[in-house]
Length: 71
Image 1 (cartoon, rainbow, N blue to C red):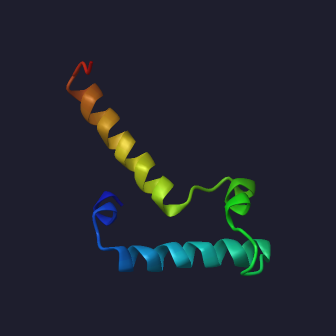
Image 2 (cartoon, rainbow, N blue to C red):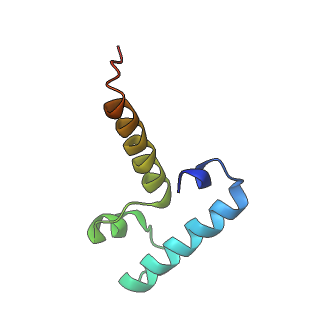
Image 3 (cartoon, rainbow, N blue to C red):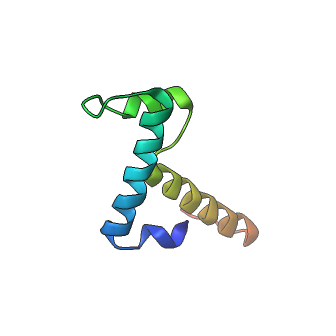
């Protein structure tokens, strides 16, 4: 997942479009309607939010495993 964050935009945009398509199908949302509220209703993170979450978790694990203090 973290590797994808630094990938080219084209493959990422394909994954994001696929994720949006699935959310639209699940909620029967037309293309003209914003998809963001439907992620919230389903309790899902968008792709970029997932990448951020895993990045933060990796940083937390690294800091806590090494007993680092950050000021």
